[in-house]
Image (tube, rainbow, N blue to C red; front, side, top):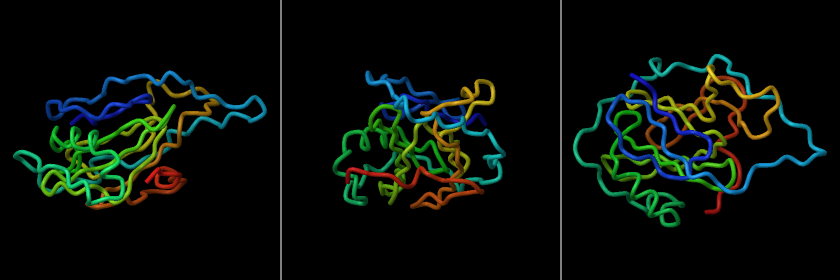
Amino acid sequence: MIERSVGVAVVLLLAACAGGEERATPAEADSVAATTPASAPAAPAPSVGALPRFEEHPAGDAFSGPPVPVRLESAAYGRRYRTVLSEGARSGPDFAGAYTVVLWGCGSACQIVAVVDARTGALSQETLQTTSGVRYRPDSRLLIADPVDPAAPPPEECASCGTPAAYLWTGTRFEPLGEGPHPHLSGPRPW
């Protein structure tokens, strides 16, 4: 099974694709480039480190059938992002057996990641905020935020590459997995 990934400047929601194929959503590039003030030193590039493997965290039974419409009232952010959430949920489950990952832009080098239960339409009670997207698979509860591609690692100093971190989907929330920082759960949210 090939994992699905969403890249750096993604501001469109995930579209449906055939199961098992790699997912890379077309990006609508933000016209504002991320900048670092000249006085601030660039952060070191995130280390690829030993992140958990998708096979170590299998999903439960896969959902088949049409997804239930999103229950916008099930999370604080639901009504504010009703269009992107509703359209994303229609594509059906692509994560952890019965869930759909929906991702939208929140500014230059910023994405918000939410999860919709295809069986009930319930939204995740929390979201992740990433810089470089996410990687996930339909048959695993593991989600990697700000993944690093070993074939094309970021430069030594990269102020906007994000921090790779693993999260385990519990069915309603993201549980940090492994050692190291897990910055994707914190940060300002407009809701």
